[in-house]
Amino acid sequence: MCGFIPDANARSGHGGVIVAASSGANLIPIVAAIIGIGVISQILSDRYRVPSVVFLIAAGVVLGPEVLGVIGPNSFGNALSAIVGLSVAIIVFEGAFHLRIQKLREAPAATLKLITVGAAIAFFGTAIAVNVLLNASWPVAFLIGALLVATGPTVITPILEVVPARDRVEAVLETEGIVNDVTAAILAVVIFEAIISDITEPAALLTLFAERLGIGVLVGGLVAAALLYALRYVELSPGNAPQNARLLVLAGALVAYGAADALATEAGIAAVATAGILLGNADIPYEEEISAFKGDVTLLVLSFVFIALAALLQFDILRTIGPRGLLVAAIVALVLRPGLVFLSAYGDRFSTGEKWFMSLVGPRGIIPASVATLFAIEFRNAGLDQAANTLVGTVFLVILVTVVLEGGFARQIAEYLDIIPMRVLIIGGGKVGRTLAERLEGRGENVVLIEQNPETVEIARNEGFTVHNGDGTDTEVLRSAGGENARIVVGATGNDDVNLLVSQLASSKFDPETILARVNNPENAEAFEELGVRTISATLATAQAMDNYIERPSMMDWMSEIGQSGDVQEIEVTSKELIGRTVGDIGPELPDDCLIALVQRDGTTRVPDADFALQEGDRITIIGGREEVKTAIEFVHPDK
Image 1 (cartoon, rainbow, N blue to C red):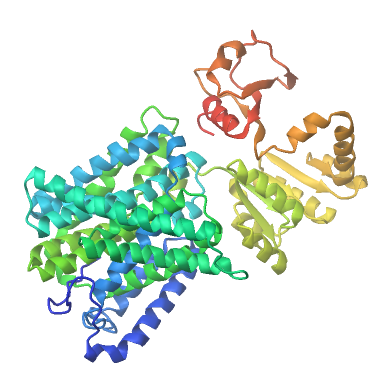
Image 2 (cartoon, helix red, strand yellow; image 1 turned 135 degrees about the horizontal axis):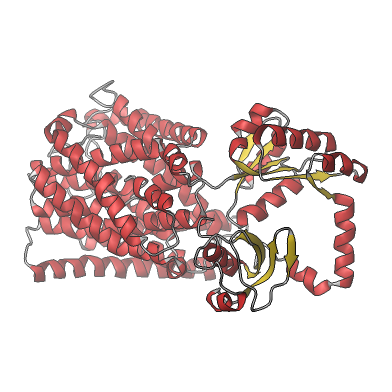
């Protein structure tokens, strides 16, 4: 991508909002058009499962002066710096709000290494590449390095929706994006202030860092405390409290940014980050409503920022940077990224394919784009044109290369590396199908519902399920929903004929490991069994469940919690370290609150004693707490 450098006279004071008279008449239709295109971009993103940034960048380039000329440097008058500043505040607050301290404490070792050691490698490695290849000064190189540490959830999440990787992969990438978005922004602010203030002495740099961070933390903490008190103890409205809570939090984020920025320039980012972290980790009322509302507001802000900034590009900057800029992008994406991922994940339970996937999927996005342009405006006003060109040109080029290539080809990369878990297809999106899908997804399975009733499709999608709209008895529908990748196919409709036909098609066309069917009429069970299909009779299952509650109430109470607090899983032993070892020897290495209950070998299932030695191909049943069982499965079957 390219950069935008506004006119030095287009700004009156930091954060000032003075719209030029010549452009004011056209500003409203321009803003309306940008927001409309942004929403359409999000819809296209959901439809085609690629990051919305791709569409936003394309729209901005087309609307900009280099193509159609609808939007140009004077379209926003003097308001652009204030718009970008407030947009950055909302974006950083959104990311910080979702940063859970408890999740960081429970994160795998690879995640903690990635946001510390890995971030340091990206920071210094990028700075060296920029300094050497682009002849940038060290302060500017370090500023670019700080910004390009951030990956960001706004570009990672859409990729993970397209590529349903295993839980451990998604957890690492999402946590890295959220944490690095916040830390990169704060680090970049300190470096930027050092450049503007011409500070090079270590003591002065430390003082500058302490001042900006201290003021930001203080203001952010005070605003968070005030919001928390208002949300918990003030009756916001007898009938419309959730809406008032949403508006109050949004206003609080903007107040935190403005107040801190008034006290010390660029301290506002630290303030909104602090407020977001504190509120996100507090037990606040209406948290889900607030989170959803902020997501919608952030969407509009992202749309405006990316389209407006992309529209104000200058191709000359890219031509100036030239092949060396592409080489910097290649080093960031293909050298530094794999190096820091493999180093961070060393010794952890990630397959080589998963490590390469995490290496090749680290697109840069919103924070680098927004903050870089905000700083470029400041550089231009300070007369540092060359620094502004290098900053914006390099950052946007890296964003363009990584988002388009990594975001656009993420699924192909995942398929080549064979890291996508096999799918579970459930034909029938009614209550039975949705309940089963909820339990399976709770265990990390990649579940797709197939349903042709429009009302049922809408209900299932509103509940957050992935739903393929079509007739499950159509081979092409099954194939487009992922039938060739399906490990399990379940016929869960209320029609036995449909379930039988689905079972026949799945067996003959796709050959999944397991085919399971719901049998509504017990007399039809024989027809399914002749196909080798496992069946669940609603009548028989209900009777057995009632009998179990009568005879084994404690066991049934525990079984009802499976998928929530407790779990039972059967898995094949593939870890070479466990072959030949006894159950008694392995037991202490499993997490607390779980144990090996059953072992199946050569079609025979038994309860093992402590001296029972495991062999390759054994299938063991692990029982215990949900998270403990999940950890034990990764220990027994590292590729799961």
